[in-house]
Length: 342
Ligand SMILES: [Zn+2]
Image (tube, rainbow, N blue to C red; front, side, top):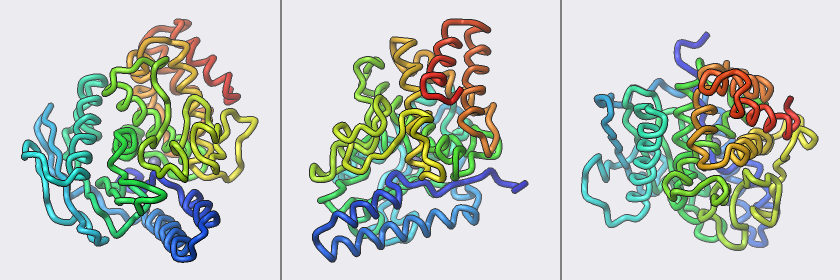
């Protein structure tokens, strides 16, 4: 076994989506740029196994929030120039403040709701780099920090514009620490890795907006897409509903639509929907019961966990939190049954 837990380079936009958009592009230059970016995403993702341990991280004392935002100044060198540290005045640059505030909301959510001190539970510093490359149509977690592109301004707007995208990326850091050995970013364990990021991303957004499960829109990435592309990347309430998201949304909602060898951003629709169904059955806020159940289940998973393993782990953690045969445990079982995993 590797001495360091599995770390992914995890993108919010799949290479597949970039290729679909390239196919639809009427402008040749735009098409080439999108294909280049799809290739770059695939290339960076391939580097995951050589990502270095988090030596750049400074450890803060318990309960202390520490954020650092860097500016790559449209270059590819990370982390870039330090532009805002913890407690520093807001910047004149909107992206810097969005990255800072989004990381803060995620930290606060973990600390206040789940009693977790940052993504590693040891108060690790949260580093973000904005303005990565030129017109870069993606955001990613590279195993050590978050990286945000500005988007080309047409298909994608700045990637710091949606708090759920920020929390999604940071949750990849949570997963690599909370799941023993991390979750391998391929097949079902990869789709689970993506789903856990959507689950926490959506919860942080709902918590910040004080929205109950019934009030929430359950969309991921609303606000980062240009109107010609669509409204959001994914819907947890109704995966694959192109009206709610975008024209190429091929997420299955249940195992009946499971795509063999599908992209990790595709099959994640199934566990995403299970979380939504559990939240709706449990009523109230997503973070009251379903959130803690999902969070507690992470420690019960292994690196190659399947959807069935996640179903088992969440039922087990519901039992640990609420008791065997509790309505909470039943709601979780029903949710996984509804999406066809059990
Ligand atoms: Zn992701």
